[in-house]
Structure formats: C-alpha cells, structure tokens
Image 1: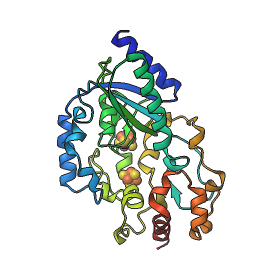
Image 2: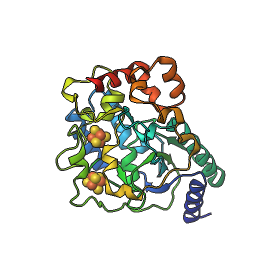
Image 3: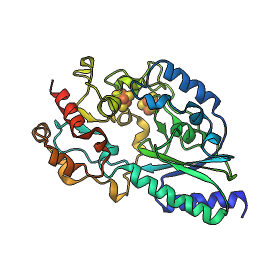
Image 4: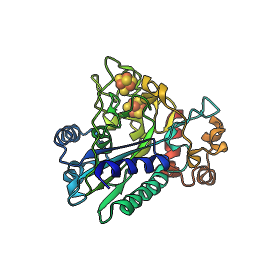
Length: 308
Ligand code: SF4
Ligand code: SF4
C-alpha cells in the first residue's frame, strides 16, 4: 500500500469512528510555536498551571516523544450541543462538560484508530494523546490543516466551527501531508469585545490564562481573586463566551455521541438547587464527568463566588 492509500484508509477509519476531522502534518521541530510558548510563559499567562512550563523541549519537538516521528495525525471530535440549562439564572457549565469525560471517550477511539493503523501498516511505533502529555494540540491541528487558531486562541474550522476536542497520534510512519488553512478572523473582534475578564489581548491570539474564567473555575486551586467579582458572567465551570460569539460557530452541527449527552437532572437544576448542592447530589450528577476535576469543594467555591 502506498502513502496516499494508507492515509486515505486512516481518514476513512477515523470518520467511521466518529471523528469530525482527521488531517496529517509532517512531524518536526516547532520553531515559531516554541517562541510563542516561551513568550506566553514569560508573561506568566499560565498562572499556577506550572505543568505548562514543564517538558518544554518535548512540547515543541515530537521526536522527543516518539523516536523517529514522521507524522502527526490530528483528530477532532465534535461536542457541540445546542441544549441549554433550563433555568437561565442557574450557574453555567461549559458545553464540553455536559456528558461523560471526553478524555475517556476520545482516548478509547484514538487507541482503536492507532490499532487499525498498526494492522494495515505493520511494524510501526507511536503514541496517542488526548490532553494527556506535553503536546501542543492546537498547533498540530493548525499545521495539519484542521483549522486556524483564532483571536480567541481556539482552533476554528471554516465549515465546522470550534466546538471539538483534539487528539493526536504521533508515529514513525510517513503519510501524505495536508496543508494549513488561512486565518479567516479578518477584522472581527467579537471574542475580544465579549470576554468579561479581558483575558484576550487587544489584538487577539493571546489569552492570559490566569484571567480566563476556565482557569479561574477549574485550574485555580486557591480562592478566586476579588477582582473577578461580577465578571464571571454566571459561569461555575469553564466558559463558552468566546466560542458562542464567534461567527464561525454558526456552522457547528450537533454531535451524535450518546456519551456526551447530559443527564436530564443536570440540565433541570435550578439556581436554588445549585446553591444547596450536597456532595451526594454532586457525585450523582457528575459521575464520570470532567466536572469531577474541580472536586465538590471547588464547584461549591465557584457557586458561592457567583453569589457575592
Ligand atoms: S473562555 Fe471566557 S474568560 Fe476565557 S478567554 Fe474566552 S471569553 Fe474570556
Ligand atoms: S469571534 Fe471573530 S475574531 Fe474571535 S475567533 Fe471568532 S472570527 Fe476570530
């Protein structure tokens, strides 16, 4: 089988497994991205996410993750769900966390795809990733032509929007490579204007992670600084604003992944019920869900912060 046939078979299998996107970039040192990451870290935009500063060399060089790496297969898995929480005044949860934790769901599918590649390509080596190792996922998605990185720092596809999870397979197999897409943000500034904490730089493309509501509600382990009082826009876990306002998301289509469907009782929780959230109810609502990352105490902290 030649390279083009192999690549086509991989893409067909990815589609069968439910991936919205599958494209391939040539593995290599990420010169520009290394400089950007270094600047971002030097500005301390990672806040207390100290892990972002770890393994810098591996982040920018896939051959340090997989010896002899030739290709990076970038995958996107749709999580768009137009369903909203019924009580409009209830504390809000980011759409990506409505259902079962994507790390579990998407990783399983990527492993299946990788096993398929081994079955057709023979003795190859590689590793698969879903937010699980020092991989610059968005940059690989951009390099492979799965979209451009918008002013809101999200990966955007001109026909599919930005509501998808990313994953990768880095492997020592040469494939046919795809070309990056153009940046179609143009003169738009909707995400910059809408961000309630001014986390996005005035020119866009750089997000101060330490000001982002996603960071404040999920990653930050200490108290949320008082400077963010009245700026949280009702979010208790994550924030979707800079995706909600992005015009390219008019092309998003609902996912078909049953495991991402929210429990009905989660969507019907009222503001009052969230205020009185008990640990058993939290455990019942979020079993196997990414919201478990904050733990009960963290989510309660976020809910109380919104009440101040
Ligand atoms: S997720 Fe929310 S807080 Fe973070 S950059 Fe986007 S709009 Fe701003
Ligand atoms: S809202 Fe506008 S500027 Fe922001 S990412 Fe979308 S297209 Fe780009």
